[in-house]
Image (cartoon, rainbow, N blue to C red; front, side):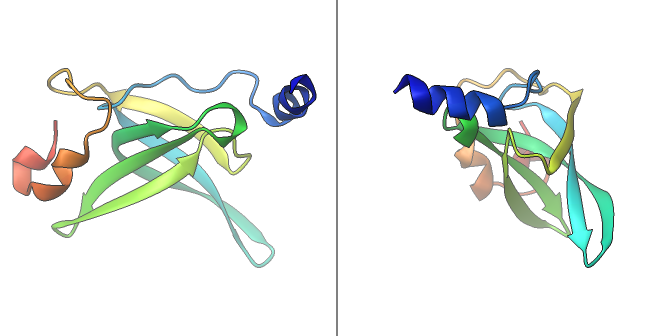
Length: 111
């Protein structure tokens, strides 16, 4: 078991970004298109943390043209260049997973 953790430690980020469920974050994700590379920002609200170790993920939700769009990012992926907290939630969330926001529309879709 210690061998597995040792191998995982090599692939983990030295200082992973710190954020909580409910925070509005800007995720800068590396996109490769043929030979070109660019960084694409994805701004939204964190609705879930999941996993542990190298397989730790988080889900970010945003509203695009009145339609909810969710994207799950691996936290320790080399393609996730940077995660910065834009602002905290308006209200402190009472739950660890904010899936109830999926059924809401308009201003109530944000915490």
